[in-house]
Image (cartoon, rainbow over all chains, first blue to last red; front, side, top):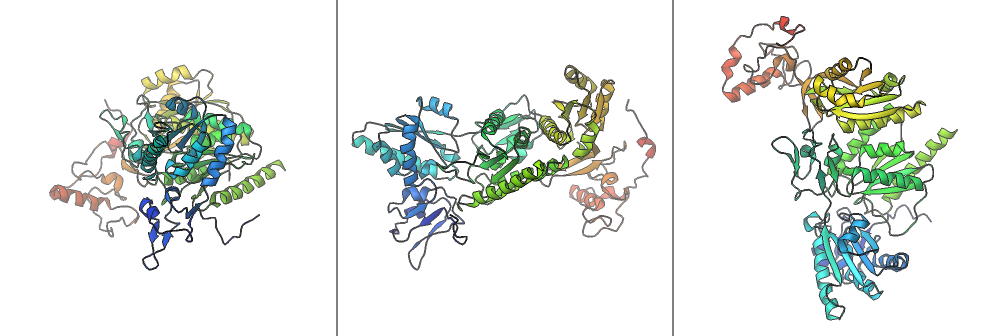
Length: 388
Length: 213
């Protein structure tokens, strides 16, 4: 059923009926999106400022905040289903921003097999989810959060840390033993092969965090403490001397091949910034569409777009945050220009209208679906035109 | 650095269409913007896609060279890679293309770039501007480090002409007046007297084909 056009699916809402005006949400919001109306005392949410981190949702003692992503109900539903599916007693909750692949996660926590729960920011997981999971018989909970200064939502990772500390004390008092919830932190950063560097200085010029420089013989060198893992330097490096941990070129290429094998024509591959679109926990994907989530649109690499076309993809959609929403100091904005440039070159070889860039935000639940719908329609028409 | 611009891809496709086995050779030297391994790979992917639309299957290999104009380096790096290659498509400036063509007389060598000038890149705006014409008679010491040959639209050696408005050239308002730049530079350096010095007309004999001993 189509929803009425006038009512957009807003991602976060404050339900005034339940709000006790305690202001906890207001003090936690990293983006100053929540304010108090001085006249009425009501708590107000400015959705345009909201980055949908879910911290307010997880912390509201009155459950007065509604969200369309990873709400209590759907998280618990997922856990119920996943417990059967994975046949494991171990749950790993990880932030998409810093989680390496599942094998590495197993190694990190010393578990074999686990129920994965990948979310944008672990700070959005409330006490209740942890406790209900334990109530469901999940014996071990592992949390992989971002390093505190790497958190895309500033306060999400520190909040998760404090929450787990308190929960562990509580669980110990209840007789569940010590450290029921294990917390680890990580981050994914740039790797440099200094032998391949040609001293062009692109990384140093483009890095939004000043993490890259050329040392005395003119070779790229990185201050990893400042690297925030956007991947822009990797894309701008003309010599393939850089890699972003967990998003290595070979790995993305292999992923494209794997996804392509599952797809039906017309095939549409989407490169998304993982902060621009929040994937649903369930829901089936159309067999025509596959998604690759990247740490920032800045990591969308021309060679991977071309790789996809070479392998037989009919259309490539790049979904990024707007420059104002970019969690990576506007690094994602560069992606738009790079895609435009590539599009121009593609049309020179007669390959038109197959690549499209859109900027979306999770604050409107259907923004991405609309873009994907329009693009799919266009590619379908193009493909039909070719067959005729 | 040597500033080049990519030839239109359909022109490159026309150039390579009689052949099948192509080696794309990048250059990590002074070509700007950088035309190294990434550019070689990207170009191979684009040409392969374009080739398919034309019903043509190319086989590409990609490589890059430290300085394509250096015949010694290029010979040693390229020799092991040219077996079975019909065409080397060079991403270097015209000098690199000529070096490869000379080293491998049996192989077709094609340029993928149009070579423009010696210049510098404004990374912020992504523009590249000519800065030196290689006149062989450098007078930058007199002009505060601004070359009037290159940057004055009239090539005046004893400026300014008087036609500039708001610091911009009367022939092209997008362009700074070189002589106003020279004046400002000399003023800052306390060398304004330099401007009074008469500079004789350029000796075009030096510009003829030349060899530096």
